[in-house]
Amino acid sequence: MALIYIIRHGKAAGSFTDELDPGLDALGVKQAATACTELARHLPLALRTSPLRRARETALALVASTGQDIVVEHRFAEIPSPGLSLAARGPWLQEIMAGNWQDQDQALRHWQQALVDCMFDINQDTAIFSHYVAINAAVGAATGDDRVLVCRPDNGSITIIETDGKSLRLVQQGAEAETHVN
Image 1 (tube, rainbow, N blue to C red):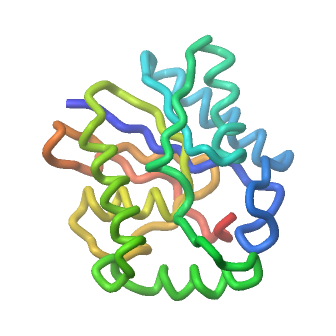
Image 2 (tube, rainbow, N blue to C red):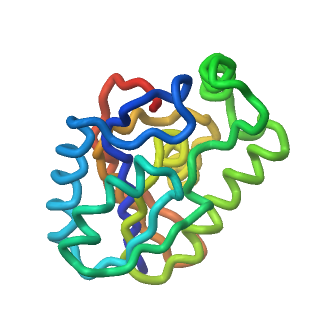
């Protein structure tokens, strides 16, 4: 059995509809430090991150304190929105989040399944720095809930899922908040 600690990145300096790859703002840096302090209590952990800047920056404090390398995990990246303008991304995402995975197009179902497969591939306690919809996909898979939006993970929150390589179980839901996807 392995525990997967999925951390939502700290508050970003730009939103999903403002900027493709923003870093953290000042509050986000504080949220990241708090999350990394909590994660340090659970070491040793393998470290993985979404390729996006806000997730990588959230991981920095833990990487610095442990001296560990961090692996970029593309399967835990932000939900893909290829070809959409920044302005079109917000309304598109709102529509996606109101639905179920089974109703999404093949590309999004493939992204969601790749994320689930990534969790099945984990065989040691691991921290993954990721994003709002990715955390929802993980929690939905662990609880058997097909809705795209099953929780509202706060920035810097830590959700814990257990895997034996064949099944997933939600151990602890991370802190929730009314939040903007960023």
